[in-house]
Length: 430
Image 1 (cartoon, rainbow, N blue to C red):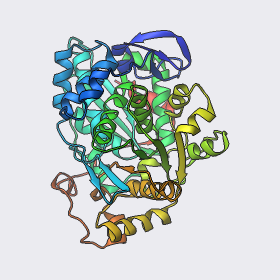
Image 2: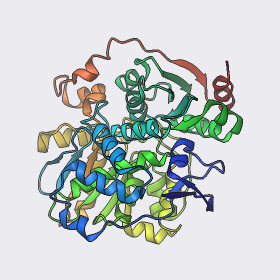
Image 3: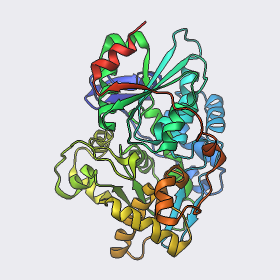
Image 4: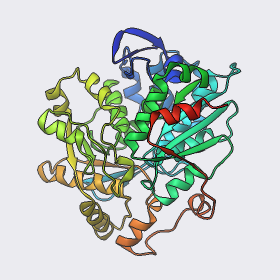
């Protein structure tokens, strides 16, 4: 498997270099040179395969031998040892629950796979691998959990101060060991900008042996394809996937899956008021801007990194993209109302991100009543106890033990200004 940078389409690297380097030196993003189609045999069998069998077939087809088959099988079995069930609210609304991993968020799929791939790629290296990641909520906790006490690694997590939920913050600040949290006085976009600056500083990148665990890393997107296959094969017809979106890695993963042949009726990109992509889909004008804090904090992104990959997959053709993707945006008042409505109508407790997805599905079905929607529920509602309690009452749900046990753990973080120079200086200190 070879990959190229979106800024240098004639320059290629192998899979291992793309994963460990994460970001090309030209500030592009790595993309596969070729996205292979799954063969007829796969499609004849895909509904009868186990999740792990299906996952191995899909990933092996994409990687084309970049990881030996036996090693890949072991990585997938170890990393993806939890389900991705589809729950039917009714015959039009399905929910794909992606919160059954150790940190109760969809990021567990990508983070656990990536951690094991990196461990295999660096199995003979002597230099410590520094995983540098920005988070708007769930990525930090998933990466911290996936890499915690993994030999030969240290993890540096940048998160925006005051802009993640209390339990999300504990997930990334309370583990200790090889995990360090930097509390940035700014937004997620500032955190993302600082991470990119560190990678583009060649002296720092080489000296610290930097790699990223954000969705700029292609190894994050590959396992996220798998739950689309898993859910689609449970339905009688291709669904409309409704994807709560922030940095748009999750949606990009679905686009990769469709390029491999996954049948999908349509894609709805659901955002909160940070709506630069829905705006682009409506107007053809892309206007990044500072993000605004909302209840659905993991989607508070004003300049999504993976938009570049989306454009690449559609050949920078706005019409081609809008034929496949429709945008939808809502505000916090709508999010709160949706949490109440889903509980009242279906007896289901949905988190703020899934609530944004529900509103988008509802809008889509108003004009396409014969479709079936699959809403991605990207995080367990217990990660947002204040919002759920405000809308549904204090006894609406139980806090899972893996979250409850963090409540009394001390927060350990290092405050830092939203300045790339400060991060680079800190990384290079003895």
